[in-house]
Length: 417
Image 1 (cartoon, rainbow, N blue to C red):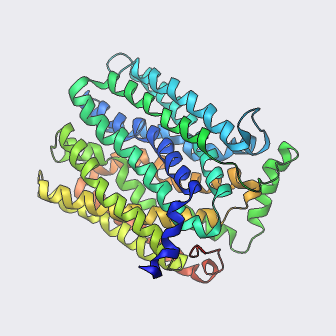
Image 2 (cartoon, rainbow, N blue to C red):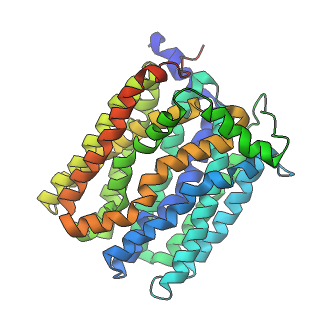
């Protein structure tokens, strides 16, 4: 037990606790414009190709690096450089969620899509500053566990806005459900008010030009910068593609009910998600970053095949439990390693812009190829679709192997002293 004490000490950090709560605030809006909205469209009778096009609501997550320099350069007049922006975006998110509650696919599909696009834009903006704050506030020994608990908070929020929201929608309707989700954003506001400022806040760029040019110059002058960006883009590609239509697959593809999806796909997956994120974060304190990325990435890729077997099995609760458990375990571990990688590549002087660029590239596959997933399902069927997502994960692992020497030079998460 004493040998584990240095590794467990970081869990007592206030900084790590704040990262957990802000992770929850970041994750809450994503499902409301993604899988939960997808379920709303599905039960409203919208065709699968139109639903797939709705994945482009996530475009702001892809383009957020374009306005991230503004959040590096300008400091709100309250709560500091990061926390001020966090509270502003959270207030806008509450307004957007209430706006989604005020419409529906039956009233106006276009209006619902536009309001959801606003929520996605503000959510992406919140992610910019939350990611930057996490990079600024965590010490090197806290990075592995900080990445893990941030992922944990993020995924717990997605379970609430994805799993609990589906159960609530089945019982009280979609509009009251979105109002309830808007109220939960108060958790984010409270956590931002409680959050500490960095001990040594990075200097604010002197001009907007410096906020745009210097972060890119700093990154692209590093050896292997282009290959590292390729790794960021490809590492979670298979996982992202598989998740694009998972909710539609479970409801329409294999015939589960909204409550089935809410309880089993979301809430039974919670236990394996917790294990995956925390075990992944703890292992990151004892493994090299390369080994963690490789092993967790392999598990992440293989987990997609469990949904292929579920497509063959049909409405099998046993296969559903296995697939959901395996996918959440592997995804939690893989995401913890990925976040640790992204933090290690950021210069804290430009953390908002650099992290926004990296996370935007990570979202590229999910957003850009979202509409293609509907065509793949229509052309090849669900089982073959999930096999294709497994194949899509392999190039990222190959590139990771090629960069193994360079990743050995990245700052590692070390046991707390």
